[in-house]
Image 1 (cartoon, rainbow, N blue to C red):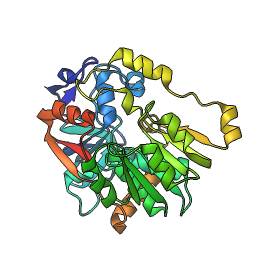
Image 2 (cartoon, helix red, strand yellow):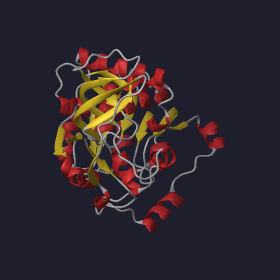
Image 3 (cartoon, helix red, strand yellow):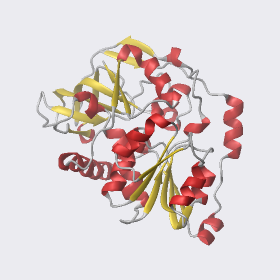
Length: 342
């Protein structure tokens, strides 16, 4: 088998493609011959050495990757999945490989009508979006919500899931070429912050504020996202992308420290007095809640079967070009999902 291994933190040069032994499944596990691998911004953060759960749960060396699509090629004791079945899986690291072994509870039928490259980009972004909206924010039909980075992977999923929940959805994008993608995936209105004042436009759309704001930017928008919540509004935080580099693959430690110091700290008293909520989560710490992840995947696959959800645009790279995939994702210029093909 081939896999990408990172032996220590750094830039793109730390992504090493290596040969290894084909893994064998144990009790309750199965092996997947991988056809495609979803790339997520968290994978870049892992490479930089800044992803807390990667340090705590695995350490160095590490193979990144949270999601794959492929075919069941072997099963361990107690597993009844048929050999040859097309599946998708969430992996909690280790996904950048031509074969992976995962617990059967993290494996799901591949949706009909999707290619392997499309299916590989589904689990992480849609599970993130579903949890953020249905388990945390829970907006009511007819309420206005705002989604940052609306043309990216999680943003694309949030647009669709929020629209399916009956919300009016404002998508925020950072470039003109991303507007059409956000509109096509269900945004009621799109704000292109490269051409308009983001928060002036947001106030014009929802003068009373938003029922929910979904923010993975970090310090660049968190304070204003909180400030533009309506009474009883919820700010959901699931990343800090603006604190990390757009090029070069290595963090600027002085800037990172400065942005850390500038990151808003929310006062419990202020939350009570303003009647607002701030919530955050990281799916990599939630694999012990298989009940929640399974229920969420059931909703997601049901949405794909019903045609209310669909994959955004997918850009593919050979596994040998993993460094280019990371560089492109970090640049902020990409639309939709990036996928590696081993």
